[in-house]
Length: 153
Image (cartoon, rainbow, N blue to C red; front, side):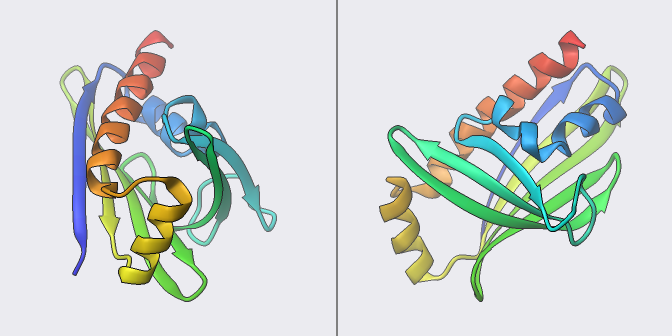
């Protein structure tokens, strides 16, 4: 059974401008308190279905790498990338943008499909026992940082 955490924030910027920031995964470390960015793999240079991104993450002194695949890409409305560990289900990260009168509403969601083994290993690697609570705080910070960057542009 999946666990879902979602946060949202209105940003006073056009959806296309916010999309350009959200879909630039190598720069995600500029907004996220856990992600340090990374690089596209396998010849990919931008978000598109099937594109693979190699990410770097940290929590304090702990460091780990991830590999995600873009599974949905509908600019400037929806971006979904999936983390898997080998054949094991991991999680989906979802960004949805909806136009508003003053810009756009951005919803960031984390859908946890990990089984008990990945929950245990993930906690040991990252030092995070309660991933849902931890991610909610990180997602709120990410959207605040994203808003500051988009609104300053």
